[in-house]
Image (cartoon, rainbow, N blue to C red; front, side, top):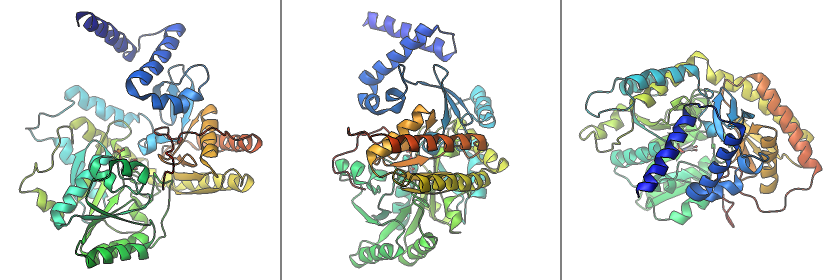
Length: 471
Ligand SMILES: Cc1ncc(COP(=O)(O)O)c(C=O)c1O
């Protein structure tokens, strides 16, 4: 035991030196890379090592994420990558935006976390700012550390307010992987192994208002009326699926007619990603509950929230800790949120996303026309863009080819043939032109070579494609 403590002290001292930026020799950094791969294999999950392109496509040495600024990431050997993945949407303001970093550093030096007794000024300030920028009557916020937990809170709020237990979600919808949020997921791959979450959840095809009405009617007819319909304004994880323009207005109308709440999951679409501040702004509707996450933390801190109207919020007032968490609404996360809102408005990130998205989508569609056998569809809105390939191996080969050309993109969690492009909204046009050139090179290479025949992981690199995986 004593020996182990000495070893741990020695290792942790070495890590702390590296964290502090102590210079290392080339041999030391190579050794550290191999040590990291080994630790991933033994102590994290060796599944990652088999599939991460940062291991399989990086050449002799795996790429360790080391630093980043704006839309450029550097690995520990100083190799540069253009970030067009944006951490699945967290880096809308870019990596380490100076204003967000400054706010967090300023607060960190005063006090990082909260005692839980004194009032937290930045929690209140952020809630107030959100009430000014969210649609309709939304004005009360509960802060938490990730999107999944924001959805979890929204589920509880909807149950408490409506007294109903049945939820309606969409096929292909993604809302997180905790037992509650997972139950609303319209992807069997992740939900089925954990069957038995929320008891009564129904799914309707995304974008189909007629099917949605049928679900409301059936639930009503059998005496299990819907508590809430949860929907992404544009399905992100499913590959940037844009619904018909009248879908959300009709969903709003159906929720009103059947006494259900409309929960907009803006965790990926919010904060300007789709070319407007919120995805629902494209349809000019206001939800009853909105979940935000990812980029609301400014790409510096984990932060998420569920936000609702004063009328609905009233059910949380008699016992304000009926839903609570130790870290939610902590000061460093909240100041990051305040700075993120400031940057989003000051730099007009929604407008940048709209303009740049239009150019990139046009450039990609031109490439699709030139390589139709490789790239079969381009879709999306703003800078939430999905590319479709004929098969998982081709999609994976595309993401791998871009990685070798030092551009980060990834597939969705369950399909390697659907690739997501989600760069920072303030990414310079020059980098987007580099992206298009490297996409063209990669499409040409794939078109000219034999495609991999071995089974591949989904290119999000989290799980292997499951046998017979659905949706
Ligand atoms: C629409 C949506 N909802 C919920 C989540 C879950 O958020 P988190 O991964 O922060 O828990 C995600 C994550 O990708 C998402 O895209």
